[in-house]
Amino acid sequence: MSDSELRDRVQRALAFEPSVDDRHIGVVAENGVVTLSGHVSSFAQKLAAEETVQRVKGVRGVAQEIEVRMVGDKQLADDQIAARALSIIAWDATIPEGKVQVAVHKGWVTLTGAVEWYFQREAAEHAVHKLSGVTGVSNQIAVAPSVHAVDIKRRIEDALLGSALLEARRVEVSVHDHKVVLTGRVNSWVERGAAERAAWAVPGVVEVQDRLVVG
Image (cartoon, rainbow, N blue to C red; front, top):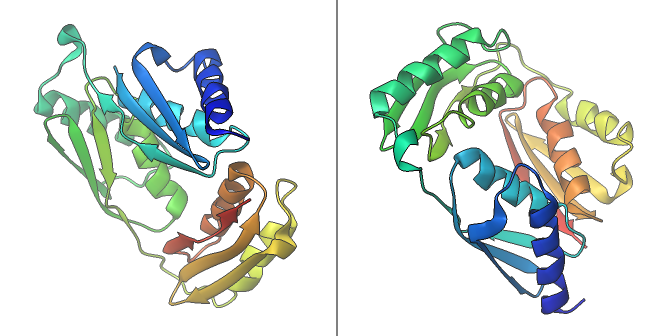
């Protein structure tokens, strides 16, 4: 597939994605790597644009250079954003109370604290990235499991075998000090994401290094 064909595919995908306003997004494709530039009105749109491009056949990598530019009447003070972030985190029953702290600087939210499960860390980030006024999120929440999982590798391999989205035999799993490394080759970004999610879902995992090659 030529670079121009891939660029056209990506532009069509963005145009058909209802959660993305693609009018101010630029697309450049080179050797399967797509660079997104321009601006959108929310951090959620920025994430949605990247996720949409990753699903396009032929995309091997994404360079994300989109800026978040707030409409004038949607700009909020940092303390307002922080208060809203704390409230929405408190409303989420999957996030343990009092375990996550929030700091905001010029609309950029930084999350700190410690939780026992990766899904709790993810839930906190997902809770705030759609808030009005947010220009970016740094998730520095630590995953600190209270129990040791000596069979992490086996559980991950079982999870990969049980996934209908990927060919598990092409994925190699190694574990050291609760840190997981995935290597091998997958057919698409969808498979790559499925493998990473399967690893994160296993109790005791504190870090996943996804070194899978798409293609």
